[in-house]
Image (cartoon, rainbow, N blue to C red; front, top):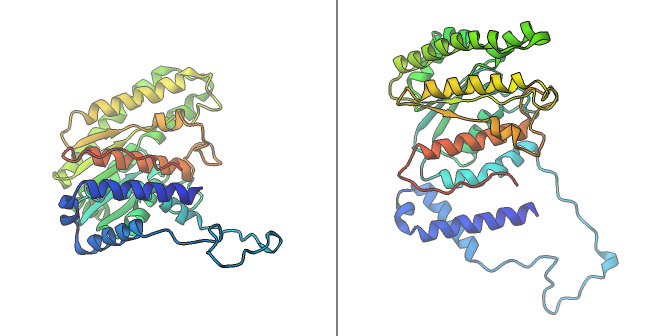
Amino acid sequence: MQRKKRTAMMSMIIGILVSAGVFIYLFLPDREQEKVETAMAIASAPPKQTEETPVENEPEVEEAEAVPVEEEEKPITEDIKAKVREVVEMALDFLKKDQKIVAIGDSLTEGVGDETKNGGYVGILNHTFEDHKLNVTVENFGKKGNRSDQLLKRLEKEDVASAIKEADVVLITIGANDIMKVLKSNFMNVTMEPFQEERVKYIERLKAIFNKINEINPDTQIYLIGFYNPFERHFGEIKELGMIIDNWNDAGKSLAEEYENVKYIPTKDIFSQSTEDLLAEDEFHPNTNGYKQMAQRVLEYLKESNEEHDINKIDVAS
């Protein structure tokens, strides 16, 4: 079933490319032109006969003699690449060549909770770019436990600053540990006041982070990735927790709108509206599927940044 879906999707993509004419084709490098030609040749070729399509004049094999063959289980990392392949195929015409992406922040950037140990949403993006041989390099400076004050200090480090200086895109996840610090001190009596006070300080630090990045590289595009509510499943009755997440997200989004080169990427809806389990065993960080959804969302916003291309969104979920 998965193979049929992927085959159908590839056929649709080839149809889109054909209808677009030679415009897209001419702007692909030689290597990508060869891929398009090969894909179109395969699509137009007659289907090969399989065991399910008997060959004329060939004796049929009795049903008792048929031995079912189980498909070899693919590694999880290969499955991840396959799931996001469709989106990246459509992204080929908007991603700049020789592009560099730098990811900074906390455990969500590091990829904690990803059972494949491949770096969460950043790793999924990186594996996919490599799989398609795109000239997009990704550097991950995520560090578990980082708060906004700690990230601000890390921007002074030579390796981080040097990477940002050459970056076309900077992805940021930060603030969840700022919230957790306050929550640990007030968990038995959750009220809005201490979180509102800390939110003001968080926004001041976040502004300093944006300013520092722009000081290092004024030509980069910054994306602030918002929070989701990991407590919704087990502490849904504590309405204040959801309000805190919303307030901090709104503050980050409002700050991003003050900068021409900063965009806010929401993630709360990904987790709150999903019927799938998107959290890891710790019930806090995303699992591989959750990170896959985050990777898709980031790709969607990267595409939206290139308004000259009107590309329909394709869901990577199977």
